[in-house]
Length: 77
Image (tube, rainbow, N blue to C red; front, side):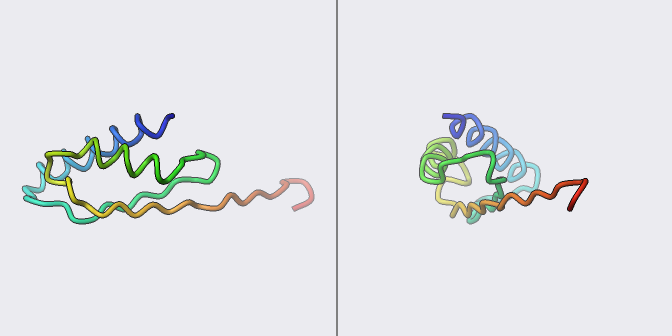
């Protein structure tokens, strides 16, 4: 479950950015993942909400975008 580690890293970034910008509350966090990362959105949401508990981002709305993979052969296009 790599979602937990990524959620903890994201929460640290959000909290540090809020501190640096002197924000008293974070209401929304947007994040995009490539499809190959294989994040389970529900697990990530739970891990993020636990990571930001008691912080300025405690009730932030987490918007997750999964970016579709597009591949193209360099030889035949």
